[in-house]
Length: 76
Image (tube, rainbow, N blue to C red; front, side, top):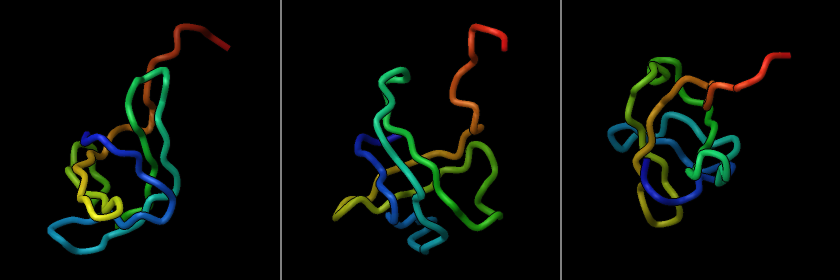
């Protein structure tokens, strides 16, 4: 949600408490957004949940979404 690229190892927070960590993150040219994957405690994994990622000295807002980032326009 917020600008900033989440990187491997960054803390994922909820209400100031560490609940997981980023496994990978990067800028997606096709989505024109920063995206990341993280491992978090299962109680925080519901789609739509707002979480926070500690990126250096900043706290960025993030949201849990369906892992399918886009709908492909072709069939296999």
